[in-house]
Image (cartoon, rainbow over all chains, first blue to last red; front, side, top):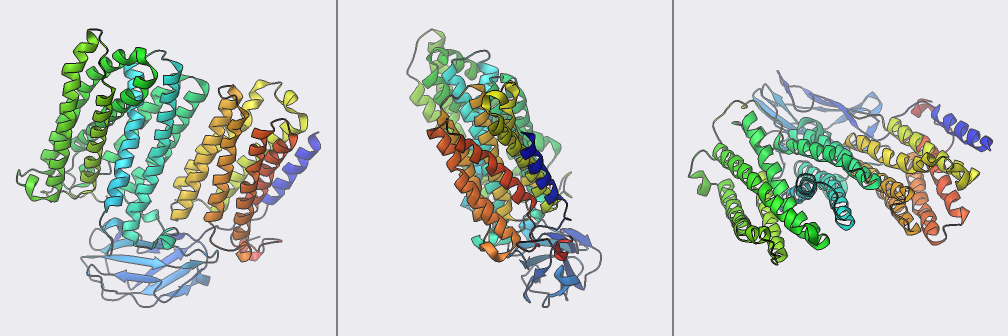
Length: 434
Length: 191
């Protein structure tokens, strides 16, 4: 019986013996380094690849801030593993963009972009010469990300904080399904958002974008580092939730919620509240509290309307009343943190109507006002009737409030991608790498 | 921050080989004997789920190109979901043989990802050859779980499914972009 296994194992081991060769073409290093600051202007740009590459004369283009090309035709060295492009006309005190494109022996044509500064701090690759601004696709992906995060954190919070203890099996199944799918959705939408944002800077047509080098964005920007941490972290969250479902051991849920809440800070640590010149630890904390309270509120509403109401009639009143108490605290945190952040971003009142950022904020506040009014009706009119033992028909209204809350997230997504007006430098003026 | 591609492929190959050996063992000795110790039933779904989690680590190292980032994320999810559902089947949470269709879908999606992420024809390079071979093998192998859903007692489905992972492991171990398509790896591969 054992002989086939031994033969198979030996065969597999025999294949491990040959020495290693690199796989796909990867940019291993550059001189000047990606997003580095050099003291004197270089006379050439050198790119080192993991494999020999084929190049055209414009394989490397060095661009000045005005878009002027400062590089001469590129040439190969070191058996094709190094590509060198002579440059001239670089001045101290300026930042430059390097755009490159080569072909590997495997037939793939990777391309990439990075920046460096001569005597100045290099901007992040998202601000490279030729990089496009954010578009509606970025807003959409950000909104879907927020919505997925809310559908993960909200139902988990409702189940762990409001509906503690056993619940009917159909409701438990729905909690498992929604939270696990939401965790996977956070990962997938996060990947899409990351690629979209990098594509704005890479400026490659879709077939070429597939082989675009995302490393400078992943390793040299705050949003890239946050993306890596979030992808891995939410992979663990999804695994914990799968375990909770498979094993019926709900003990896996609290760590999943705790990890998701911690990971949400990655968004705050890579957004405006961390990268703008007047950002502080307090603004980062306020942003995280704002985001987390909004996610629990929106996701909790969804869970109430689409999970508890249809599948556990006996728990409706308990869930509504418990969530109503929780929502008061959530709204208080959300409003206070939001007001503080608005003051930080828009210190001058006129900025509210004179800048695009301010106008989007106004729009968001309008939708928030509608959502809070809706919630107020539930809190002051529906709650007393449920406490009195009545069974008012409230589900359509809960569904309506959920959709308005999702609209708040859309406005928040647009606001996150908008550029706030310039402010005076503060404690983190030297921060870089959005 | 980029691990050598072959190191990642070999790591994946080792996991897949272990998974395949577990499945082959069950086919050889028969399910009643293999599952005399109940924990053995959890082995292959746990390995699939575990490989999915590890693939997330590989995914975040795959930012050297968009297509590799997307493909690795897809494989990670496919392995996680297939492993999770099979754990639920083994545990008795899901009872219908039709749940093996989730595994079929995971194989189909994984195979499609292999084929889509390889733009070159079969004989362009060893990597291209192997990517096509792996892709089509996984697409065809999706028939085994489908067959299992329709005729759960037929041994051929489980045998084919088990051997798929053995062959997949061998192909992953043989994956070297710079080597000739067939034969030894040659000087360019350092061998």
